[in-house]
Structure formats: C-alpha cells, structure tokens
Amino acid sequence: MPGAVRFMQGNEACVEGALYAGLEFFAGYPITPSSEIAEQLSYRLPRQGGRFIQMEDEIASMCAIIGASLTGRKVLTATSGPGFSLMQEALGFAVMAEIPCVIVNVQRGGPSTGLPTHMSQGDVNQARWGTHGDHAIIALTASNHQDVFAITVEAFNMAETFRTPVVLLFDEVVGHMRERIILPQPGELALVERLRTSVPGGVDYHPYLPREDGRLPMSDFGGVHRYNVTGLYHDMWGFPSENPKVVHGLIRHLVDKIESNVDNIARYKAYYIDDARTVLVSYGASARSALHVVESARRKGQKFGLLELQTLWPFPHDIVGEAVGRAKRVIVVEMNMGHILHEVRKALTNPSNVFLVNRLDGVFITPTDIRQALRLIEGKGI
Amino acid sequence: MNRTRLVFSGSGGQGVVTAAIILAEAAVLHDGLMAVQTQSYGAAARGGATRAEVIISDAPINYPMVVQPNILVCLTQEAYSLYAATIRPGGLLLTDPHYVKIERKVDAIQQQVPMHDTVSAQIGNLMVLNSCMLGALLGLRPLVRPESVLTVLARHVPGQFMDINRRAFCSGLELTKAEKNRSEIRV
Image 1 (cartoon, one colour):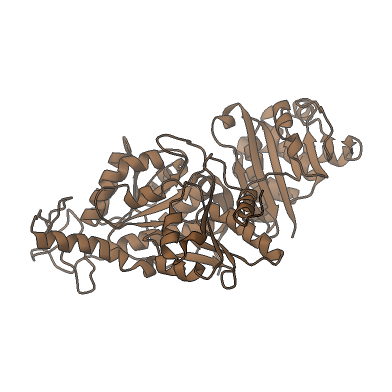
Image 2 (cartoon, rainbow over the protein chains, first blue to last red):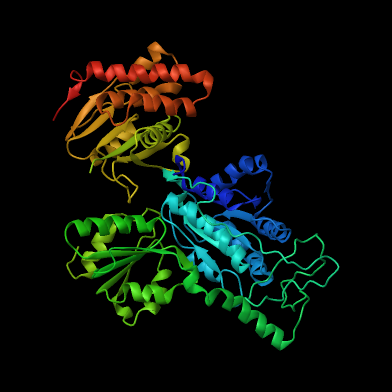
C-alpha cells in the first residue's frame, strides 16, 4: 500500500526521514537555511519520547550528539557552513572514536557567513577534509524530497553499519523548496539498528576489538561496562597508545572500513547514460537543472545523459569511470569552483574531456546557464 | 504536457508566499497534480519586495524556479516594475488598481481586479487579501478546484480566521467570474 502523499519543504523531508530511521536525540543551533530541521524536531521529537536540546553553539551540538550516541541513541545535528566549520574538531573525534552520528549541512554561500539565504555547494570538500588528519568519511546528498527522505534513512543506516559520522550535504534550494513526497510506510525501507555487544556485565568488554567481519559491537555508555573513549590513538580497550603497530592498525582500520566499501556505499542515479555522447555529472539541486537540460536535449534527439551522484564521499571513481568513460564530453555541473570536478577527472583515462559548468553568485544555476556553457565547450560560441 | 508557471509578487506581509504554498499544496494533495513552490528568501520577506513561485504540472518538475511566468500577480508597484517584463507572451498579468498603476503594455492579458477595495468593503481586514487574490486567480484560470483551496486553507488558517478567509476567497472568485470580460485589456 502506498504511503501518504504530502507537500513539504526538503528540510521537513529530512526530518521525516530521520524520524523514520529511529532518531532519538537532536542537539543543534539554528542557522539558515537549515533552521526548519531544528524547528520541527523541537516539537516532533519530545512527543515521541526523544530529546531535543538547543545548544549554545555548534561545537557543543556536535559534542552532545557524540555523547548521546555513546549511550545507544540514534542522533542528529543540523547546521549550515558556518556551523559545520565549528563542528570539525568534534567531527574528527567522532571519526577517531567511531561514533555513529548524522550531521546535516544545508549548504549556503561561503566562506564565512557568506550568503545566508542563497544556494551553494561549496562545502563538498569541507565534508571530506574539514577535520584534520588522514581519515575517511561518508557524505551523501539528494536532489528531490523523495530522495532526501530515503538518503536520510540511508545515512542513519550507514552510520550504524560503519560506526562513523555521516554527513548529509543538502543545499538551500532543496532545503527550502516545497514539493510532493510520498512518505514510505513503516517497514518499506530497511533500517539498521545499533550492533550491541553480547558480552555480559562483569566480563571484559573490548570496545575497539573488531569481530571477524570487522564490525565493532558497542555497549551503551553508562550501562554494564566501563570503558574509555578518546580522540588519541587507542588500543582495543580504548586507552591511549603510541605503539606504532596499534597506531598503524587503527588508521588503516578507520580508512579501510569505508574506502574498501566504496561500491557498497555508492548511491547514484543514471539517466539516459547508455548511448549518451554528452554526459552531465551533477548532484543535489544542480542535478535538477542538469536533468532538465538532458530531457529537453533527448526530445530533440540529442544523445545526452545524466549521472546524478548521491554518494559524494567516498567518491565512487570506478562506478563513475565506467558510467561516463565512453562519452565524448563529460560536463560536471556544480555550484562551486569545482569540487567533484577533480574526482571525475581522476576517474577517467582522458580527463581533458571533463568540463566544469558552475555558478558562484548565489543564483541557482539555470538550464540556460548550462546550455550556454555547452555551446562554448562545443566551439559554437554563445 | 501541461505546465503553468506562476509568480506572486508584492511586499512582505501581503501573504504572497502563503498564497503560493496554499495553491501548490491544493494542486498536489487534492487535485493529483505535480507542483513545486519556491520563494525569495531573506530580508525581502519582511517588508521589502517579495516573490513566490509555483509550477503546476501533470508531469514531474525538474528545474523548480520560474524565469518567465505564464501567470504573474503583482500587488505592489515595485513588483510590477520589476517583473512585468518577464511574463511569457500571451500570459496573464493580474494586478490590483489600488496598488498598481499599469505603466506600459506587455504582451499579456492584463486583468486589473479591485481585490483591495473588495476586501476592505466586504470584510474590513486586509489580512485576507491573499485569499481573495487566490479566488480571483482561480476565477480567471481554473488551475485547481476551488474546494481544494478551501480544504487547504482550513488546514493552514487558525479556526477563528477561517470564515473571513473563505469569504475573501469566494468574493475573489465572484469578482473575476463576473468581470472577466470587462476589465480585460488585450494588447
């Protein structure tokens, strides 16, 4: 039976997805264009037994969700670029301590306070490398409300599966736009629940000793086991270690658990790719303008295709290379100075066929913008 | 494929954004159509020029913005000056003579409907001007069923204000049904 048809903002679709996934704790500090997420959760969460806290800032917000996650809760915070910058230190802690958590960044124009109410996709590399040190991260996005809901559920699932922070990189256009969504019924989308240890109280529990399959069962902090959690390199008990073997083993584990699963984590949509001579690669709201261009080109018999990426990190180089490698031209459409552009180039044997079509002035890129750039690339002039 | 692109423009507080949301929601939830609604966001929504956009279609909508509207509603002179030139040839321009003096002719069906004066005289509360505008619009272009809008209005509007909103909407509907062929200026 299909679920209820609703009409809502993208930020509300994210809230619905988070609640569907089993969100129990939200800590945040409101900021445009993400505020509706905090606003809605401030009354939705308490009504179903969850907790909502408005913190003093984004540093505290990120720290609060880390603590709540350790106690066994599914947790979320939501912000925009300036707040995401403040969260980077604690985000690194969550990477190191392997804390499942979801961070929404509804992107606006940057750097600094930038363009609060306008569209940008300038935080893609910040999601990847905003916190210091070698690490891996999962970052997901979506271009429409149905997908915002689904990818939010996926974010919670991946956070639990890989014991990692997952960043949801939405943007102002998708966040604020209202459109139709069919809310999935309970059970329609699979949910991943917290993997808890079977070690009983009174028996030694090693919080960082992987099982055979590489996963680390958790024990709710404050429950039956006492253990240490630190941002320092640590051994299987969670206590600091400078042992080179331990250090090397941990950094490899942190990176490999995500990078070696790149194909499992990859989410994307291919439109008219098979025989496409010109392939647009895009994501988030920009993919809507790109799809508009592709569909109108197809109506004229032009062989255009679109690869819409939903997983941005880890970047699925093999999948992208295979999908667009045969095209004569690859056009990356994004609202920044070229973040995904370089990854697409890395994925191809002939990177000189890859072009960037962007817009940096806060105005959402139009199909006309893309067509004009295409004419220039094709040598036809404006 | 049927597709109507609308721009509602005015100043903050006139309810143009709310009207856009109500129209789009009625299309999606009660008339089985696709619709996307966006708006100018920021300081403009609190007193300055405000603009809300709706696309209604029977097919999925990708690019969600409106560059050239088929239907343009202007409730301030400033909005009219800014946007009148963007209307699609043959489109509909709906203005209120209380707010807008039409300065130049655009290639559109120009409807000047006295919504302000009607709401002032019949209801006495300009808060419901936007509901009257929605009625006037649907009297000219039956984009969605009037009862769909009333259902959505009842969900959005606090109970004590529903009656004046319903009356404003119905008076708008009557206004354009009756005057449809009188105030129309064709170029």
